[in-house]
Length: 557
Image (cartoon, rainbow, N blue to C red; front, side):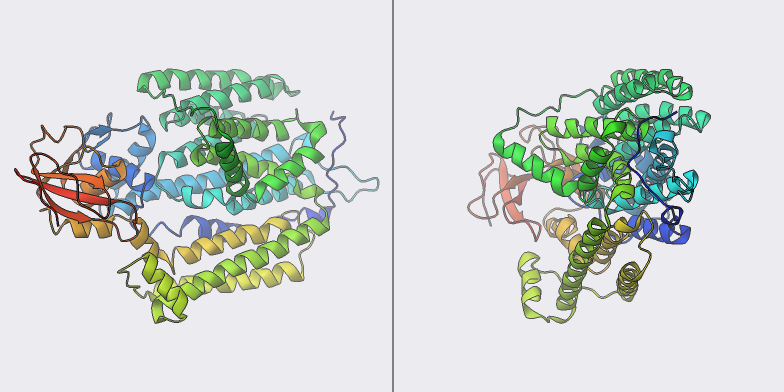
């Protein structure tokens, strides 16, 4: 029996579940925008796509993905997923086919967080206080309402917005982490599924490029299970240990151990990392702190210890890696779970403050997006149009009736939801996170419809490749030992050139050479090569790509 008093006091009417259709629409509005109609973006997005595309077209082996001769970082599983879908869906554009499995992974993360929270909220220690004369929330209804809140908290997390929609190994790491949290949460209720999940989670995390985090959360999970009051959970500890051992063996087999720890953080770096924590985990972190305070007597219980332990490992990795946002992203599922347990203890004034902040902030964001869109299409207002022309010179905004229709529908849905939320439904546990989640989903939808051509122009390598094609024939070989991997991937899989980034320019058989240089001034003289051109992406201000052709003199133009 649980003898620790619970801070949750929840009447039956507050344990309403979010209508399933509405919940599915939330998820669809979050996952689908950005899946269609865009190019791979600089930096990590196009780099990962380059490895996948090269595997799919046979330019590099499955066991050793490479771009321009440079091997990958050991995150084989995500590259295999993308390459497999490119080969399986040949009728789709390769970039779209590679994004499909990662959209499915993002959807899986949302589902896993919901089910993990549901199982944790069903535990005896997490249940609300029983009323003297009845009327308290039913255990299952309460767990569903808390799970709905966790899903909304995850959607509302600002840090997941861009990184969660990229085609990168970190999204596979995120899904593996969420699968591990689900396994720990479901171990007393879904024994077979939990065992399969935990045996898959940590090896998958290792194969996605995060072996140290796999070992860290494995150790935390084994400790939590070993100290549990439940026999079923204690019996689960050996399975966690076995999964951790498999992850270690796989890490040595794949040679993915790498020292990524940054030097000790300076005062400025600590300040920068602190700011990253504040905005990246918003709005979860204030709710997490409130959860830890109100449930402080329950820190050793599974509904707190499971998500808290995994979140601390990811947060420690973020700090150790010098403030890595991609490491911190792995904490978001656990932070969403912790944030959900704050909901039964929030005062009405706090909920109202969250609502009004969300209404004003996201309405303002939507208004700005719409004003800039109108300016791009009509030239009015003049100042936003001039800003776009200055920041993205040469950009001409196309018009798409389909994208406009989706944007209008999303905006009308937001206005309806604001009216619905402020008019009634004040009792449901998840009410405080509806508007933050809807606001994030609306902003992402508007960006991926109204601003998508502009973002593609600003973040894609396509404009640069078109300019380089005027100087370098498509069948040419390019020596590029100093170029970043993102540009190497773009040259190979989007430009169609043969690229060699391994051989020094003095020994390469290639006819053309590309290096990164300054956008102005005389180009560096490279012995044996003639300067042909200097091109840059329209939105780059500080760097340009210098093109040389094999020759005996160096010129410039």
